[in-house]
Structure formats: structure tokens, C-alpha cells
Length: 146
Image 1 (cartoon, one colour):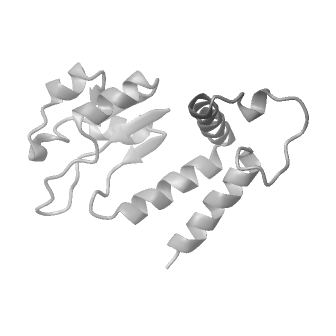
Image 2 (image 1 turned 135 degrees about the vertical axis):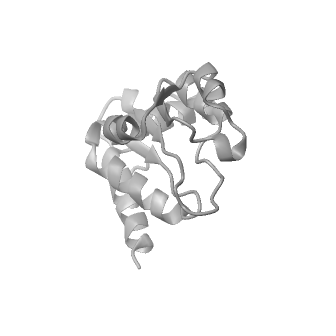
């Protein structure tokens, strides 16, 4: 996934939605991270620190145009959560990847074979199906509506 980090534009807002350490974790997990030039300056994070973590430094226009998920609104986390849920629900391959990754991690932690590798058809209410995750995310979105 291409994850963008935009500079906060709210007056007297100096935080940034992602640290260089967070960018490194995302890059190591296989994501592309695109950081707006100067996005971390208010928090004393340089563009070089993000670049060293594997992020690409870009203009604000490129961050907005190239990102599949945009991290901003650090002072409004519910708005950011709502945007993320809408993104995931709108892109079925992303949702399937998230479910598969969670299933593999659960299997690793519990020393079980992941559900998607088992024979047979899964129950739609099984917590590891794309359909059940879609339903849960839709419920989260309903709760976030004013």
C-alpha cells in the first residue's frame, strides 16, 4: 500500500502523523511511504531521517496524488479512522490482504494452520473471513457518524 504523510496545516499544530521509526516499520512491512517535504519539521524530524527510514520525500501534490492512504489529522483521530475504514472497505484486495495477514499472524501465535489454508468453506460469521471483517468495519463506520 502507498501511505502518504502530509504536513499538518492547522495553526499551532506541530505534530506529524508518522515518525521516521514508524515509516521504517511500514517500509519493512512492504509498504511505500511518501512524506511531504518538511512534514516532520515541527516535531524535529528531518526529511533526511524519513529518507533514511526508506520513505520517499515528495511535494504535497505528489503525496496527495500518489497515496492510497493519507495520514494526517493528528488532532482528529476519529476522522482519520473513518477515512481509513472507508478506504479499506472500498478496496477489496486491501481488505483481503489485511484479513489474510491477520489470519497468518494468529496462526503463528497460536501454532495453528491459518484458516484460509484449511479445506472446506468457512462460515460467514467466522472472524477470519473478508465478509465478517467488512461487516465489522461497516459497524465501526456507523458508530463514527455524528
